Length: 111
Image 1 (tube, one colour):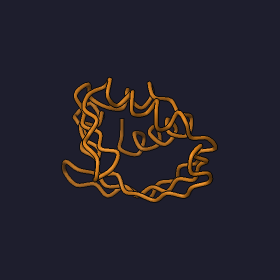
Image 2 (cartoon, one colour; image 1 turned 180 degrees about the horizontal axis):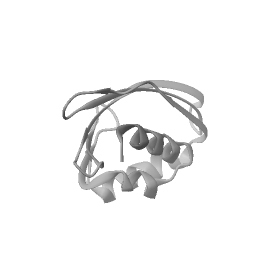
Image 3 (tube, helix red, strand yellow; image 1 turned 45 degrees about the vertical axis):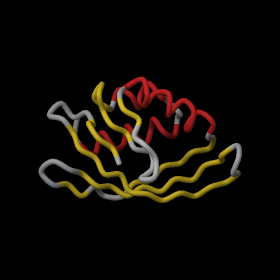
Image 4 (cartoon, one colour; image 1 turned 60 degrees about the vertical axis):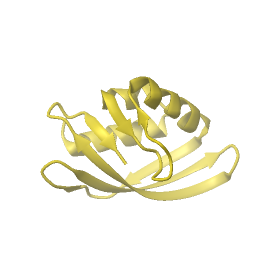
């Protein structure tokens, strides 16, 4: 899987709140940091639980991404999301994913 395909699948999984699809994009022992201020979710079960709670409550999610910047072992990609959060209402969120991948195209680390 290419980096572009991975990013497209991640965006699709977020838009459809599909925790299983997200988990399939990561290695079984991956580290997933949803915020720089939070401890990482480590491993498939922890990533699935995070996604079921966070994305499962969101609706009308639209994810857009910028062009990824790739180095030998890291990727950075900007993202913008609009959604309706049950607690916050309509939200627009920007961010940047910092990723590292294994040879099989799965992500080992997300910041």
